[in-house]
Image 1: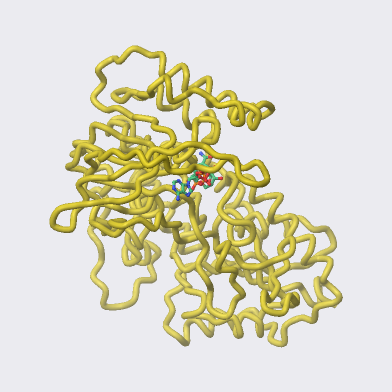
Image 2: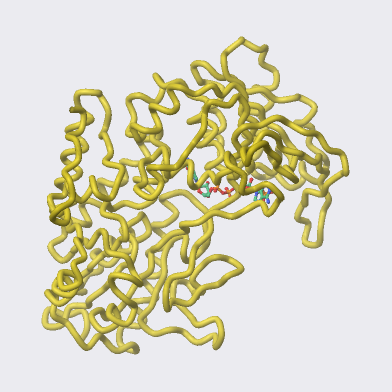
Length: 472
Ligand code: NAP
């Protein structure tokens, strides 16, 4: 019987971010269940969005990795980093070797504005910018030009707050974090003066949370700027947020900002409401201006307050546009995908085929790939528990895998020359990063390329030149 001493339940988790680790933690917590978990990630380092998404100046949020490390220390847990699902290992192979597969792949891409000029140089997604300053190997070479004065951040969620704050902070405010060295160097040369955070709707409809917006009032050389008249709340919006404490408090914070006298700090963070960029224009392929339409709110069926253009426009000079309008999941080879939501179609975590509506036995999903890109890191815990509950309910109805030899997967990867990073190898990387950070009073100095990560793990393919030692 599956899940016993004789025949432990073999689980593959694809994705080593928060939702994957919460799912593993929930499985290990089951009494009377013998489970072996193998976790795969296409990156050499684990922890996904905690390492590559959470802002470097929010270290408390990152401390959740201690919980994940405890999960990883379970003798029935193995990590296979640097293994790309669909390329290095297929769904069919996982199905042969594991009784159940849980997808925890997050939402790797971004939503677009779909306006002319969006692909000009200097117009990038916040997703890319965040990955760049967090040292994500795919974005180490991103060309971010900060020799410009005006930045437009489109969207008013917490990601918009993160990117605007990183641009607004002085290097001294970021120096003791684990921000990527390449980003710190670029930010040290930054000429940015104005950061416009633009909301298509009003101040009552912002998506950021109180602590995140409050930080703009506490920066050492940047100050928030708001036109007090833009904070007027129409009756429908007032009704919408009458019992929403976060929204009420956001408004209070914004009003307090609007009442402040200018103090002459070098940078200004302008909060602008009821504005939508409708076209980006440039010279020699590089962005120089955004044409912005002013909006009004109009209720649509169901009461949702929509932004509708008024036909009034203005043009604002900008040298960098960061669209921060949400993440989006990408399809995985052979795995069902819902184009509309960018998620893996599921019922409470059980994957189903959108064409037939039938459940796909043995496949499960957690996190942003399951519910879309919403919520904080902790939201993924109850989300993972829900999926694990479904998985356990299916324990007797869904048959197990045919191949149960635990050595078969590492052997398969070795036969394909896939230099995978196991937990011991990750610990080597981790130790060196932390050590490099110590003399600088930083939590760590990250290795930011795949090659450097593999070298640090001591498993680089032969013939690859060794990297310069950190802080040499
Ligand atoms: P989000 O909270 O969903 O915010 C997206 C923003 O983009 C909204 O303001 C939305 O406005 C706007 N938007 C969408 N389409 C637009 C368009 N075409 N034009 C203009 N604006 C548009 O998403 P997020 O900021 O990417 O954050 C994702 C999740 O991660 C959230 O749950 C967030 O709280 C969480 N997160 C948390 C932290 C933290 O705890 N410190 C940090 C980062 C992220 P509308 O409302 O008008 O649609």
